[in-house]
Every structure is written in C-alpha cells, then in structure tokens.
Image (tube, rainbow, N blue to C red):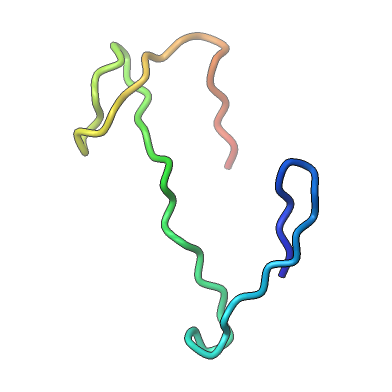
Length: 59
C-alpha cells in the first residue's frame, strides 16, 4: 500500500501477519475542537473559535 506525502508517492508496507491481512489505521495524533468561543471541547483538549469561511467539513 502506498502513501502520498507532500505530492511524493511513498511505498509503505504493513505487517499483515499481525492483523490477519486487514488494514488497521493508526490512531490520529491531531484532534481538536471548534467551539463557539474557542474554549476546549468535551475532552478538555484545546479548542479553536468558530469563524465564518475558515473551516470546511469533508465527509
């Protein structure tokens, strides 16, 4: 399986014996909250103030 980093393709191989052939995504290290006033979210982690036109949600 490959990975695109800053426009450069990197071949990255995963140990499939440990996962039975399944791809197991690593835990994200970037999690923050966007709140009305910029206060931390429910987890207590840092928050950013909601501003019109700044954030986009991709699903």
